[in-house]
Length: 261
Image (cartoon, rainbow, N blue to C red; front, side):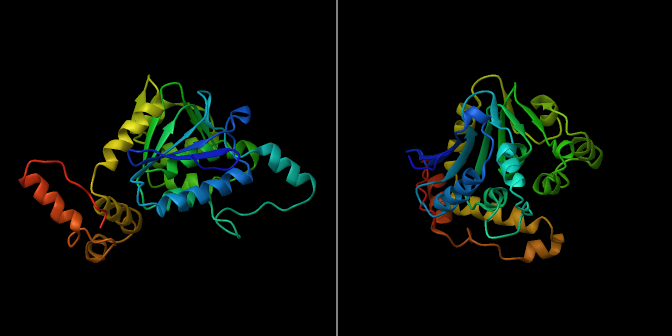
């Protein structure tokens, strides 16, 4: 296990990396140190060939992440330091780091996901939530923005839905959020167990194919169809050892042994 204060990274023997926000005393709210640690952990995960999938969760059952640590933000405001703009400056944004991570990512939403917490979940590829979890982007109640959340929701749900979510900023039960396709699973049991099970299934697929899918989905979704179909997104599964192994395993009626190349 590695990690900084407020964040823990564990690489499991099954190829799944577990990334846990560990600040339960403040409902796993994100201070600057934790956000920086998330970026560093994602970079570590991307460079580790043993990792095939990632699960992000929070400590406890009350909150996945309550958003930005506003007490820290208020302390900075009191000394007159200007607030930074999202997606700018010297530090990489943790939402962008998760969104662009080359490994498949799963959010195991163990409790409320509010503000930046909802955005962290949206930055993951797949989302499993506890039935008691609630979601909100309350930035309009705090005079803040939700650049990442509003950008992703505009590509995920109908306009009437995301306008209401952003304009009102009210807490919404997981079942209501799932109704619009934002969640893959809502579970009464432990969402971490469900998220790990889903990640293990994903980790059992060909790594080169998964990386190709992610590159195509992220970069190709904004292209015209004709351009996306002709763009050579890397890596290339068609000439990979994994493709040869996958076909051979099917013919030989055995499980494939992926090399990730």
